[in-house]
Image (cartoon, rainbow, N blue to C red; front, side, top):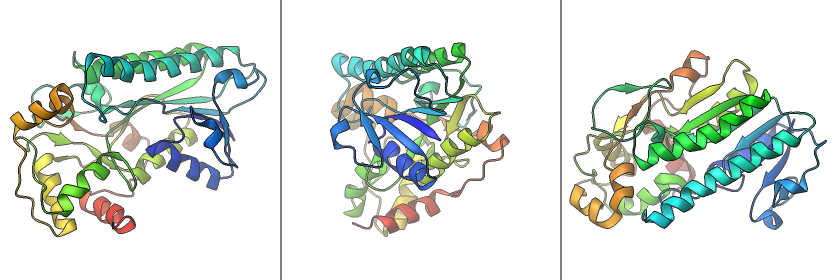
Length: 301
């Protein structure tokens, strides 16, 4: 297939491109660093470089400013929002001009859609609504922009990604250094849920959406077995053979990270991938321990 990807050089996108190339697909990547993209990928800086008669069977939209790299000032929150909305709106405008519409758009989102709220054991699936938090507001607007593709007759999947575990990037890359030195511990009460997924399974879900035409709308990109922060902490310590005694109190997170820390670290929903399970997807990594063992085995340093 011919596939167009935005955000193809990021943590998820770069691995996805490798998998798609392994399956003999032709890939065009929209990137601000298009000149650095190596063959057989083709890099472009803007949609204007694509002619209206170019045919893409699938478009995958993953572009966006990292959400947890900087403290959330008003300016940073606007930058995070704009980086997603601008690319998505421009993508839909480009699709309007194409003579042959793609069969499928997979557009990124996150389980932040479900918001923050009180920590509890309530199960969350694709039918659960959001709230007024920044994380939820961000995802709601991002998804609304992507859903404009449906008006064009394009099947649209909204990939609500959880905490992605993989080598060379993502949340785990930031967690490992303190844990390896025995300085890890639970965050706050440790009761908040962490809805994680191994990178291989997230890529697997994307490929499954491509292959199964009955899938559309929101699709949770999370493992069927989410865990609390306390369980995650103990499991990571067990895999690394390190103690996990140094808890990080709530007030320290709030002081150091402000709203970002409150929404991303101190709260979490128990999210289940109901739709992809119902569609028959079989997860490769069912438990957190097997996922962490694989990632750390592949990236021991």
